[in-house]
Length: 420
Image (cartoon, rainbow, N blue to C red; front, side):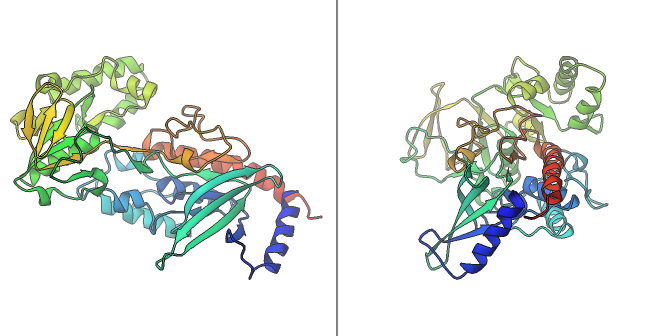
């Protein structure tokens, strides 16, 4: 029985507390282990706490929400209204704007962790997690590099493992011919903070998602001269329609109309508000924005002012890159232009396959659950996933509630069993 094994292991660990083998220490966790202290991990821990279930978060960085704290630009705001971004059991404080700033969101997350007494163990990089069929536990091996260079390996044992390391765990950096020859800086958006350091410079932004579009706008606001590489088709929608959030309005319309009808409405309004994007080099996909999101998880861009700057010519639109050379970029259409810097708004990827072993819940190809939303949250042998829905913070909240309810059932049955 699980409780019998817990008791046995606790006695053994107390006896061997001062001993270390070549692999380091082992620690038993009574509740679930959550990998990742971002919004998804915090949501899962809070929902479990509400049901009286303890949990332990392991976080590789030294802070909560490291992606938001360390890898986002200064002007970032939530792209969706706050009511679609709040975590379970605790709304945003009154008085915040509809689209909270980065710092306001981070303050909310800190207050959330404090409210539910969530205390992650920081600096723990999970390097391997695997289910041990002999003892019936998940074994999670972590690595920590100390300031003096020493390496500490700790193995955690738990009955339930919740993967909350996120869709954006690692930067995607494409290999472009001639990158080593380019004399200016080439940096990923994870290192970009503000356009102030690029004042007066010609900057090429590669990638036309929400980040790429907003970085271009930020560069404009700091008197840089940005150009935007657009290789593929993309839907650009106004952030608001009739003074209402485009996302919120879409969700409301979907209660009564089909996805195809709502898509036609969104495209009509986009043409009226933003104009025909194909006229300045940005073609739309043949599939509508909501249908495309449902089928392939590709998120439409919500315009916050970038399109107006493209129309005025302050932001140039370029084709795909063929090669780099010194301070020049050659594009696939044969044009060659000089640039002082290149910013890669090329996104992120999941890193789950690099450390989760012996499970087929996650795809080796993209690191996402193989089962699409809304069924990707639960795996086998007590394995769960939160925040891999491609539906932002709203999807994370849905996952967190389902996981807590599911674990509660087995938690109650275990507690009901008497110790031998």
